[in-house]
Length: 132
Image (cartoon, rainbow, N blue to C red; front, side, top):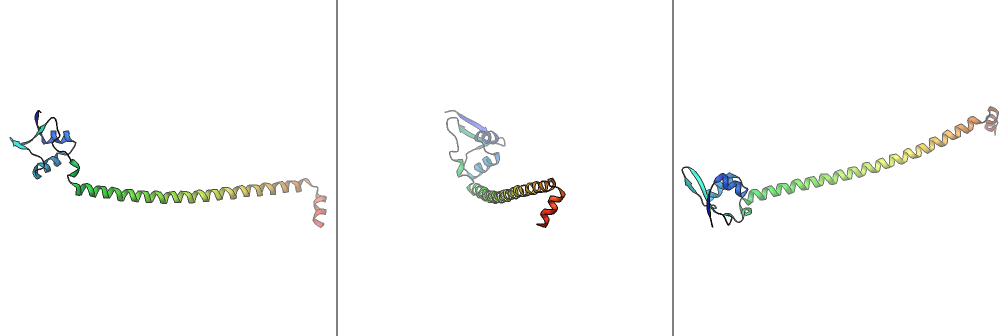
């Protein structure tokens, strides 16, 4: 296997983590490194990764983020349920309004036809009908 010396930034980029995380790992002894001319170098084998399980690192912070995400998701889901209820209520009100409007239109049309019939009758027909 070929051994390669990487700087903190190079190692961080390679592993997809921040340089600050690499520095913390070095400080905690989770990652071995050597300092040459005021620069840290991490010795890495080309064939295998240095850190096998990155998910175990900083689990309290990660757990806090997951809990915060879950709380936010729960809040958003509750808001969505409330909005769905509001939409259903408004839809029912709109349906009722449309039904009332249709009934009103029928009533208006019926009254208009009745007025037209009355206008078509002569004055004497209307007068005689009123006396009956």
